[in-house]
Image: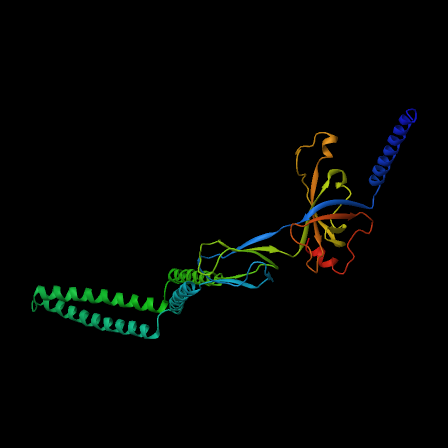
Length: 344
């Protein structure tokens, strides 16, 4: 028996080497698929208001499914409604002022300026005649020098008032200056912008779901005073479903976006179909710098795989096994393949 023992050991080693060689050769030459491992990507978003205020209503509980556009929470809108009404009145006042500037003076104001001009013309003519009479009388020594001086001053005063009335009528006819109109336009635009901002703030007192998902956490309750950006919910996004996996540098050149994949879970034998949507251009994990051929084999690259899950069986964070099909016809041929590619 001692004679055969070395022979048995040698044969066992040869058989083990043969099996290892066969396994290695078989796997290295399996050019039809690559198997990688990963997890269903956990994607979540904290939802909050863009304005501050008192939380009025919280409409969903943890675990509830929501659809994109569902109303999920409200703030007390009363302070924002009051601001909006106040700014609306200011905007209307600025608009009325701008209309007045553009329209110019009213016809009644123009008629009043004409009447004042006529009055000043009559007064000037009367003072001029008085001055002429006093001038003749002074020459004949029938009037005092003082009377002549008073008539002369009255004539100059009436002439100045006449000039002022003429300019006032001209301004009434021409209307307001372009600079005044431009200032009125700017005031109206500023008031309008403030009004629209108040309208936006009022609209932001209601919170809608940005996409389909599941409420993971309900953070606040009605009555809470919130600052801008305080989270009210944490929403787990359910569409599209992504799988995060990693592929070695050796197999990186064999895959490309759009390749068909099968995704297996531990709890279900029937695979889910998907396709590669993204391949990271940057290696992850150490080493960061590639210096030798041996080190290059330790690098891995992240894959994002878009999965079809119409029944919602996949859960975020679930570990999965991904089989990448390397056949020539390697695109997904299911009816849902077109919308699937559009989500990449």
